[in-house]
Length: 227
Image 1: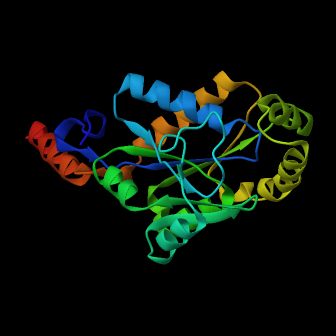
Image 2: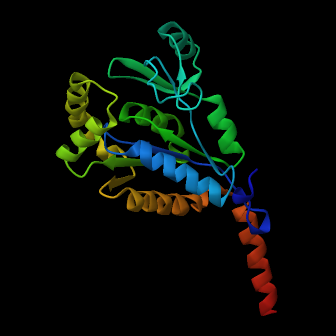
Image 3: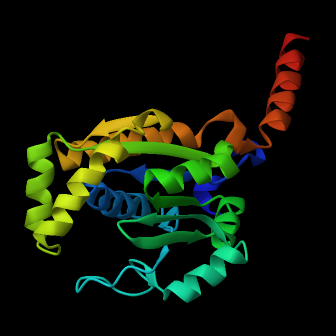
């Protein structure tokens, strides 16, 4: 168990699942990258990114096993049909999913797991592990800025960008399913907001095992002070 998961009086913290979702171009990937960097600089090993599997073709800037595990459709279907995926979805004509076993192991060890997934995957994870999940929806400041970000990325064709913008309307409609919403006007400020959410959620009573024993001991000590 990580040092961050341990507290005074033998209190241990169960890890949490932090989900960041957004329509394409809203900035969740950049927020995820900086969040991971800052969290692990403060406490090495405190958080890791859940590496999804996907049937989407690899982009030139991506590394297999780091950004995604790139699978064939048949490989993906085998994992799905064997119940080895915590969530899966079809997005923009491709399949995405999250292997369950490494997530369960991380939470039990007191480590947090960051999910960069869409609303379909979020609803599945919420349905299976609600008590472990903190879900944050990232919004672009405007439709024009969202398009500009997609164009600056220079990795998608004009038709793909148009399809992503069209799909954004459906994606944004699911914001009420999330615990928090952040409008990403400024990247640094958005990262600060997510870190503030993370700090607060880490000390929720339900995540702290041994807390009841600690409080019982504290109450006994207080009673003794009154004698």
